[in-house]
Length: 87
Length: 342
Image (tube, rainbow over all chains, first blue to last red; front, side, top):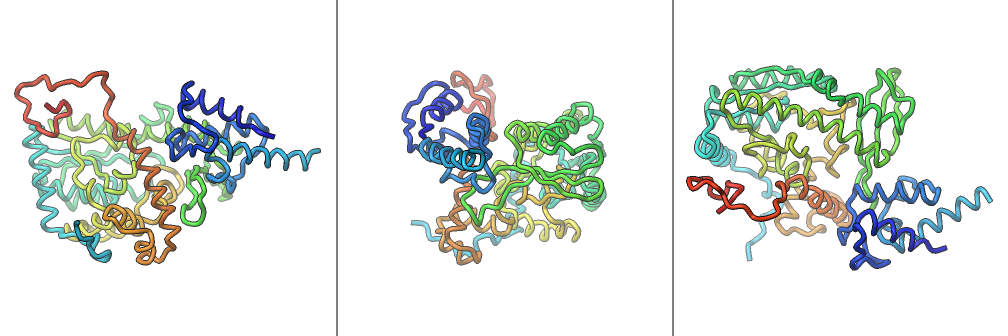
């Protein structure tokens, strides 16, 4: 499942104040300056609550969190794990 | 192109000439520019404030330096005695202001403890705590704070801080640095003195200070010195051995906390070499070989440095004005120091 839209809406409304500008699915949040390290914490709180997942310390890496597409894939994987445990 | 210095010489300091240069800057700014009679220095018993105090005494004389000792409930038991020892060594007047009652009244401890309790429900009276960051060398992990709490019976619990809890703990503990600065300016005002900040280069560059707390000052005489250079200066200034040997600490949380646990990604000796090397154009491979680390690990520290520099921009920033303002005084002699630079 693809979560790009929910993530994009959250990023645009919370960090870009409605102006999506040049935010693409592959844009690095940190390199582009869209989100700082406190913002990443806000993002983690959002996905944990919205998608009912628990992000583990070792999962808090750019590979999982640093763009819309990476986040979307990560959420999909985590949701699949939840479903596998609680079908 | 400027030739790179040898890595081994990078941090060597000519302390005699540097102390002279810093002394001149202190005299020029405090007496000349600000027209003040002396300088207030908060003495924590740590290496940085002790060196600043000693440099101020060399520059202005001990009768023009006023020391403030401001421990609070969570300060290390040795903080007060060490800062007294430094003050006696320097021969400066001091006032001991225990800031615990002010912090209690402002809700510092209560707000902090509530924030910790939100992630560690059993946290309560008699518990101690600190906040810590994961290391940066071994993984490309985002560095998020966890709280470590210790029960009265010595059991330790660690939990990652939620956004709200993290902001709550930081906001509450920042009251400590801001309270100290308020008192520094109280004494500076009544004495017609200026206030000296005590950050070293690592702290200044990486934003390891509280905006309008320890970040506020009229002068910052060692902000250009790396931490190991501050130690060299301490030795040159013949500060008490116990001060020169003391491990740097934040002295902000009730559990002992090193600076690299709280902020810097590696111990200060390595951090000095990496930051100084980076500033002088050394590659990660060169620095890795020198520090005994892999180039990849140095790259991680580089990224951490840049990330902190970005966050520090806000801490360093003056208030934003809607339009440029010209200095209203025709007699302004502050030149580049004038915030309303003409």
